[in-house]
Length: 474
Image (tube, rainbow, N blue to C red; front, top):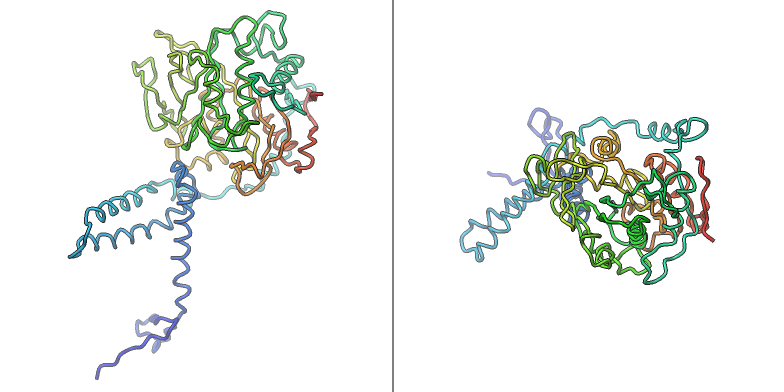
């Protein structure tokens, strides 16, 4: 007589070590535990869709690659089901099923590569120890007798809202005057003009690159009023500005310079609207490095006139591009003249917004350089950023900013959404900070500005531990 085994609800039979089931010591285990991992994998898949759906470049982040490793089998299972359905008899709309199958196969391959395994298998450094060492780090060159002025910081507080319709910005103008009083001239000129000096930064015929943060909207992007005021300040060079100003950024996806919700008194004022307001691409233009982030190219002197990224290795790459005037610029080597490079004519002003970040803690001058290399040509980019000095390596091998200006008109204190900066979680601080040393500037901003409570940020007059005191506008 054949016997039929009846499963008890909620349990399944598990064989013992001898393979004879419960008769040899086998046990029964709850089926709930066997469904925890599929549920976890499903959550990983939902996390991938929510986090990387709008920005596929985030699939290179270690957390996203780890989620992909745990959820890719679900996509494969869906593909197996579609395969069986596609070759079943009587299936209608077979082309649609086959198209869905191709899409699923692509999704299975997309998270591939070794970076995820590398991120999971790498030994985790002593992050807490690193934080303690960083908290006590105040190099002698930043203060006291060893200070040479190149690490000075300049802070302007109580910055008023810009006058509607005016291209100038009182905070930017005050910052330029204050830097000049402290020995850092904005304009290279012998003219008797506020901010002008023989060793100034900006010459009349320079190609001035303004590196903004355009990867996020709302308060997560650089203030467009500040950018407009900075462009207008450059154009007002006392010797007559004959060069050009170019907004630059690799935003890693999204609307690029055409955000709908912007960081400005007028939320509709995007970066592109600021550029268009000057109505002369030969003087003011924008270069979207994101538009050619996948293009691996050679330098201009090799005869390659395409826009794209030159790869240096070890995650480091840099853009070469053509401005609105038609000037060929290599970020590493300078302006291509047709027979050689003129690096002296390219000036880079790094203008990040101060905000929190759920991985690095703070986003400011250093982190803003994440928009310089092509993230599509990197592996484990945030691991490299945190543990191997990716941004410092990029500055050393490609270009060091001539000036850093931190936009802290609105600050996003610590919250789980950082580096996003929603309107609802930002606090108005009305601060602008500047300096030539991005490390010193980030140290100061991260320690003395961003950690302040919302109440103290609204009345911010942060202590300056370095040589230059700060200036308040009346």
